[in-house]
Structure formats: C-alpha cells, structure tokens
Length: 392
Ligand SMILES: *Cc1c(COP(=O)(O)O)cnc(C)c1O
Image (cartoon, rainbow, N blue to C red):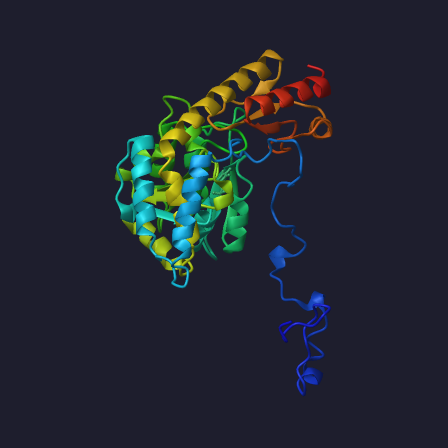
C-alpha cells in the first residue's frame, strides 16, 4: 500500500503537525466542495443488465469481425510506442476525420479546422472552458440535452434555457430575442436534438448565427450534430455553413452512428481561429495513442458503417409510423431514437417495459418516453412489450 493511504481511507496524520491541523481537518464535512456542487449526484442513465437496452441511443450493432481485427492490429502497433507520449496534435486522425466529413456531407475542411477529444462531452467542455467562464452565459433551448447545463456549471458559466415550441421546433424570432436579451458568449444547439429528434432548418441556424454575431464581445454558436448521420434525406448539415461563419462550431461523435461509444471519440469542425482557442485549454496529450489508433482504424471502415446507418434510418421511420398507427403522439425524428407519448403515468409504462426486459429512457417533457432504434429483433421486443403494457 502507498504510505499516503490508511486502511480506512482517512487522511494520515503528519507527525508533529497533526495537533495544529486538528481544528481544520475534522472529516468529510470539511471538504471545501464548491457550494453549487453540494448534494449533486453524478449524471448518467441507469446501466442495467437487460436483454434489450434501448435507452442511450447506442448503435445496436457491434463492430464487425473485420473492424475488430483491424482495431486490434492498430492497437498492437500503438502499443509498441506506448513508452512515448502520443501525437499531441493528432494530425493523422484529424486528416481522417476531415476526409470522412467530405464523404459524409460533401464539405471540404482543412486539418487545422478539426478538433477531437474523449467524446463530444469533452469537446463541449473545451468549448465552455475557452468561451464561457465566470461572468459569462451559455444558452440553449429546452427541452434539450441534459448535459449542457453541467458543462456550464463545471466551468462556472451562467446557464440560460430558452424555449422551444410545442412541436419542439425553434422559432427563429424567439431565438433572436432570447439571444439579444441574455447576450450569451456560447449558444448550444443540438440538431438533431436530444431527446426530441428534431433537426433545425438552415434558416433557423442562420438566424441564430446572425443574432450571435450581434452580441457585444462575440458569441460562439455550437451545433451539436451527435446524430447528424441519421438525418433524413434533404436535411442539411450545419457543416455547410462553416465557410461563411467563423463563430460556428459543428460537433460530431463516433459514439452513435459509428457504433463506437466505448472508444470515446468526439470531434468538431470550425474555423482555424476557433480550433486554436481549444488547443489552449486542452490538457496536454489528452487523446491517448490507443484512442487515436482505434478511431483511425474504425474510420477506415466508414463506407460499410454508413450502409448500416441507412438501415437504422429505415427502421426509425418504420417505428415512427407504427407508433402513430397505434394512436400515439410521436415527434418527427432525424435521429436514431424516437420520442413518443403521451402517457398519464409514463413511469408505469417505463417500469412495465423494464419488467419485460426492455429498457428505454424516461426523459423529455412530462408524459413522453424515448426509445432508441435497435436491431429488428430488439425493436420487435419493444413493440410487443409496449402493446402489453400500454394496451395499444
Ligand atoms: C450522445 C450525445 C452526445 C455524444 O456524447 P459522446 O461524449 O461523444 O459520447 C453529444 N450530444 C448529444 C446531444 C448526445 O445525445
């Protein structure tokens, strides 16, 4: 055991000094926790061992054996150099990400316009560290991703939630007025939005970019496209707006469409100026050589992964139709999940499904539930359970 530890986990006393410290070191209640963190629980959906897990919008398909083999070989190669720190600027990975976005969205970007971190959660934290902070405000429009206020809290940035409409769209005039009123330094827009599945039209994003450009001192607009690959045909990506808007950042992740949630790789595209600001706040070597190798090996298989995304999109559209045919309300979805309701007692429906081995998410405005698109077998299990529980 390290001699800094004692068997019961308490702090060791320091000979000759402990008497003087007795008045200050009294036990756990004396920890100088930031007051805004007092009593808070860590964020996260329950991780339960169930036959059908449709609660956190993962890709239901594990990597193919070919992808597994390539990842294993890439990791072995990286392991041979693990005595050295990794490439701090992960240029090869950034080049691969740029090439992927060119194929996926038709938008050409330079390596210096890409950024990556351990999940888009860390990318968002970098954004708030660089552009938020004490005396500044971050703004989004609810209902939206519940992690956003946590990034604000952790960076001592004030948090404001504007409102979306009844159908979860964002009214451009409401967005403009809210931005003008609060003068945020960061606006976060999830599109497609979580938990509603709603994608924003280009005109709305342009209205937000325009309002942000008028904020004194400047304002960065982050479009979180974690579910971008699942957007319906004809829905554009905000990547197309990057060339004309240096205060725009578009974030993506390998956690959802890419089926690589366990690898922790999120990224964004933005102007070089914006990316350079993120390079200042990142921890040195934040992206391990193993993470870089895993991501690059998976990106080399993006063509087959995109075919799989196509079938998940079809499954999603069919699920929306099925739920509507049973008289339920369903939000239009450009993501790999569907928000549906309305239930007088959604907790009872959620529990009834769980009793039948199907885990979904109790999230969103009262009365709504969210289900991720699974394999056809998993989706069938969800439908069968829902028919029983809700008496459809
Ligand atoms: C899942 C999700 C992410 C991705 O988070 P990672 O840290 O990349 O796994 C980001 N934004 C939203 C809205 C999400 O739902």
